[in-house]
Length: 144
Image 1: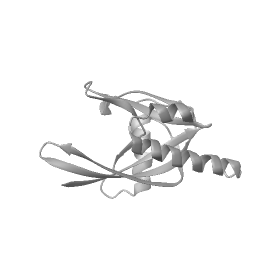
Image 2: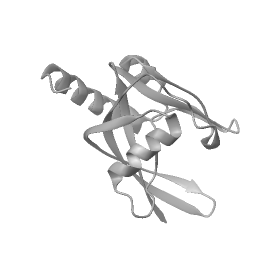
Image 3: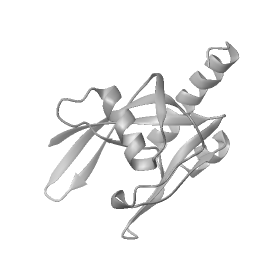
Image 4: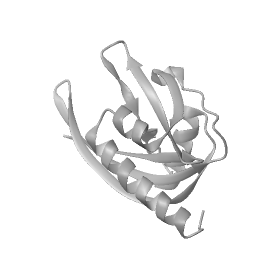
């Protein structure tokens, strides 16, 4: 078994959520939240900010830690146990540019209900729900 750790963000600008569309050789397709692998010497926060910027071109800052999701998947002759740490982030604009090297072919900011239905994985939908609840609560309190 291989243990892997990634970090990512639920990035919001003016109430809309950043999503990326991945198309890996027509085998893997779907809308996802930006995330990626922790590199040597990085904190989880640094990883999340770097991955959001690399994968989407969006400049964002962390508002708060949301939680983690866990899942496993198979690779040839092994199983990967993955843990992803998620952060609520605020972007500074609607700008995004998908990272082609990672097979992202589209990106954009979507209304919450659109983003929820577009997301491919149930664990990312759960994180989106939690992050958006936090976002609306902070907004209601005037803390954003």
